[in-house]
Length: 267
Image 1: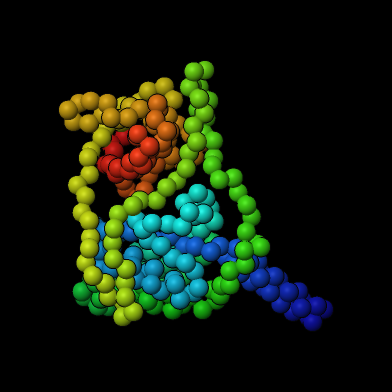
Image 2: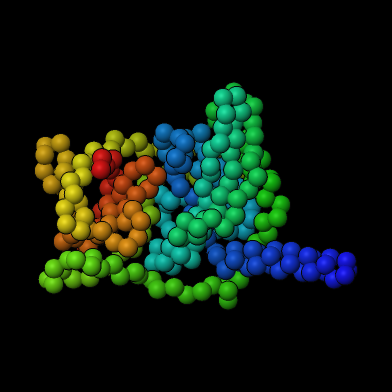
């Protein structure tokens, strides 16, 4: 009976590890946010570029969210994963952990917490992130394209209560495009940061969504609800309005030109 129990446990653990591993092997890409929630500016303390640099060691093709992405990833974000750094620092210790998510924000993997007692923020975060990465000894990866499940490239979002003359709108998540330099072999990079002062909009509730007004006041957008959390369709425009961190992003085409803007919105 004891032997059977041990065999069952070994089989269960092996099956679990294989299942966990195969879920990563079907992905070729990882996207790292160019700004994490716990910092105030793009790649502050080199948190994003260091994370990108480390994850490339696992064999993934890694991009910051403000870099130009490969065409297949632009067309279908679900063929890539998202890696974020979670900050759990206390007053005297910097604590970071790496979290791997899919395109639906489902957590697939969490590293152990990396710690640093460095007083300088840059050194502290860099050491903590490196230690979190070093704990990922069970995260082995080999890209296997045959495992990739094909998904629909575009998701049609239709508001249930819109009038009959409003056509269905295609919603697609498109990453930000802002130039920034890449970390070098020693983990350092050239400073080429872009600072943005965000326009503040105020949300006024309407049927099926909100109208967003600025301080003039004038209506900037009318956004319609979808079945996705924090994702709206921009009315009368081929575009979407969605949340990234604490801010909101509009993406649409005007005169065949892609336009992306970031806002602070008070709902």
